[in-house]
Figure 1 (cartoon, rainbow, N blue to C red):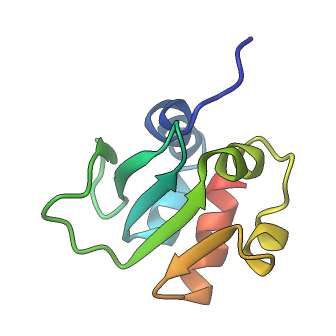
Figure 2 (figure 1 turned 90 degrees about the horizontal axis):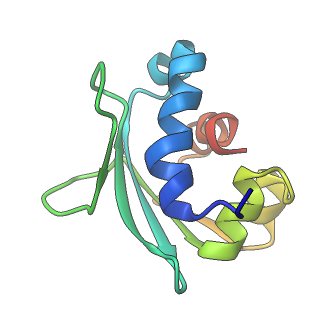
Length: 112
């Protein structure tokens, strides 16, 4: 199987994870923008305030509660459990703006 890409993870795997654990959607209940840098990067909006259709490409016209910033390779490593999300955050590979520790920890349950 090919290595996952940020697009694959955000558009396919994250909605599957939310469907498998619906409590995460209620727990996070926020709009988060993923800003991924690098050749496989891009911007995606995750809106867990809605009951479905949580992910869309782009971030135009969105006021997120938080933006997650990460390089594509580091994002893939966190989401495939090759890199611990907490360690990635502490080392600066995973950044949150503005930093909301409570929301970041909840998001870690979803991506890590």
